[in-house]
Length: 199
Image (cartoon, rainbow, N blue to C red):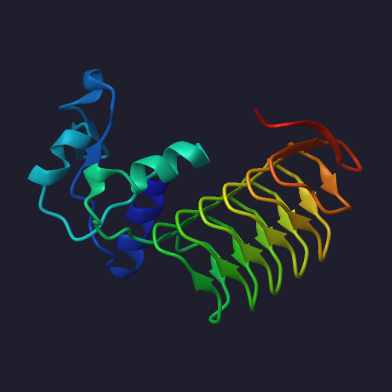
């Protein structure tokens, strides 16, 4: 998904080209995806000439761990924005964030570092998205919503205006959040209710 967004952005506006992929699966090393080589694992990063890195891992905790690991050696993280996304001019986007096709981010919103703003989601005005969060496909955040660090807002979920979702929480697919969500809670249903805390 991140690679597709980069390829589309490059074709549309000459965004930086992809030098290669790194993957932990050694069976993929030496193969190609759309003509771009899968070079090796993280150990190969130092041998590749590059300007910036994209950490395209879906799991929030793993994405954060890899991006902040010693292997990265403070390498700059690139913001990936699909050209079919809609982002208001005053939106602030943190380094390492990926914005997928048809995602919409409205004025006054701040998106943290290393986030995934996934396909077709809508983030309305004046929202705050914490670092390493993931707003999944077709999720909708009303105005003035606060999403904490490391939060997953599941596919098709809705967070009503002004609600807060605490750090590390998970909003289940299709849930409708009508009240604030405590940190590390898992909420599901319509209206969303706490099922259990994350372990």
